[in-house]
Image (cartoon, rainbow over all chains, first blue to last red):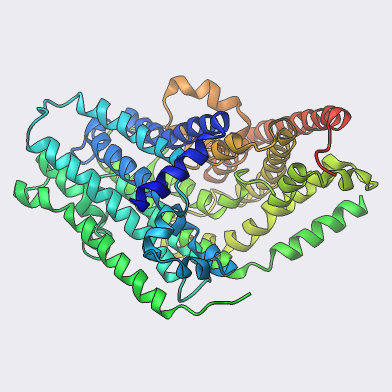
Amino acid sequence: MLFWKLISVSIRSQMQYSASFITLCLAHFLSTSVYILAIGVLFDRFHIVKGWTFYEVGLIYGIVHIGFGLAESFACGFERFSQMLIQGDFDRVLLQPINPLIQIAVHDIQLMRLSRSVQGGVVLAVSLSHFSFTLFSIHSLVIILSIIGTASFFYGLLVIQAAISFWTLESLEIMNITTYGGLQTGQYPMSFYDRPFRLIFTFLIPLACVAYYPIATLLHHESIPLWAAAIAPLSGIIFLFLACQLWHLGSRHYHSTGS
Amino acid sequence: MNGYLAILKIRMKALFQYRAAALAAIMNQLFWGILMTMIFRAFFSSTSTSHPISLSQSITFIWLSQALLQLLPWTIDKELESQVKNGNVAYELIRPLNLYTLWFVRSLAMRLVPTITRCLPIFLIAEWFFELQPPISWNAGALFCLSVIFAFFLSSAITTLVIISLFWTISGEGIQRLLPHFSLLLSGMTIPLPLFPQWMQPFLNIQPFRGIMDIPCRIYTGIIPEADVWIYIGFQLTWIVGLVLFGQWLMKRATRRFVIQGG
């Protein structure tokens, strides 16, 4: 299929500079590890926070970083989409007989950024070893769904960021609040935050639904039925779907800058 | 000297043009400040033992960090980077200016402008609405400002060093990727340094990044008593002088043996 061909081309081109690739992977792994280090420092001093231990927070942190890493590796095209519009490269995309959304998605795949997911995976694995979850159980299913939901959610945010640039190219920096701010917010349990903030991140931006509620339910921090916790991550996929719709709406708005 | 001042002025004028970006950044920083305040309140709410700094001091640390975020040596001048990469640095060498000082001044402008445009609004909003405490005394406030000025120089010295390192690594993407995260952590912007475990303190106390944020914050909140402030400002100065001398030496070595690629 053409989609996989485009992906494999992208991957092979990055592997041409293997030394640079490995250095970047290592650098990205180390720099994203800074955040678990910071959380570790705080827990080393405060031990238990609002009933949460370090390893319990580690579960959420791990899932959020795996998801964010997946999204940021495969959504670079959307992240840089405003540049594409400014330079008029989007016209070329529209001329090709493939869904433009897919073209942008495979336009720039940065495997190096997956090292954030690896980092999150290490944290998740270490945290999991402190719980007696069995491998084939509802627990693993919830965690896997949660990772899928989180990845879709962050992917959706990046698609929205791209979609907005159809209307305005100004102050896209503000979107960092939702992407990197979302990452920072999602690292900690939602119960740490004030109520209005929590409501925004549950109903308006479903960040709490993809990682916090499922995990908090598994750990008995929230009294939600297990089945509800298991399907909560689906909201991430719905969010991604709506984001794509917004993008399509925007692309119908598009007038070339011409050059 | 006049030449360098002129460059500083021109760069600052150019950088002041990005007002929309400044507004977005202010919103961004306010969000982070509010978020971090909630997180620290959660952490402090579950503890009864005493800690090296109190909750209200931590919140002050957070807001000062947000206001002065752009002071951090986390990015390098893209133009200088491409000069090294595409060989245009050769033209720079022809100029009757010291290349190190030129780069240092440019880095300084790059730090000064975003900080100046962003710090005051954030500072005022945080003071009115979000529990940023005023400095412990007028003296502490004045010494804080002095210490921040040195922090600018320290930060620029580090930035310049990173640009010089590009002579050896060409792409330097590894360092550039690590720099923002580690300078955030080591300067005490992510977590105030006093809250780190005891066994890390000897290392944290001597590394240069603490001179950028941790020392000004400690002066502001009065954790460093007024009588001792000069020791800490001396610490900043020592690192500035050390890094500048090291940078100049490195620059001399680099320009003696480098090969311009392309023609």
